[in-house]
Image 1: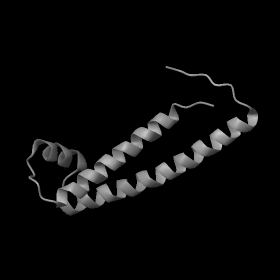
Image 2: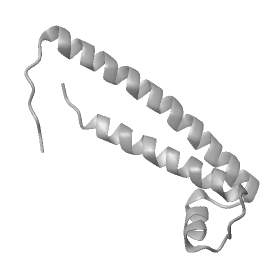
Image 3: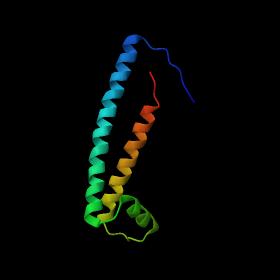
Length: 91
């Protein structure tokens, strides 16, 4: 569902600038979490995709070390979703 807003040139500029800054911040976070995921993969010698499947099926148990990895995965996924939403904004 598209929404159309009537904006002044100054308002458009402000919104674009704010979106650019937010995008930069999100990309920094995305890179941070991506790096953290790679660390977990290297340490445990499995891909994040495989880990998530095993974690969600209960194969890995409740060892607290897995919760840092699942948190990093969810944070990464959340940021990717926000960036995807931002790409859909046109001003």
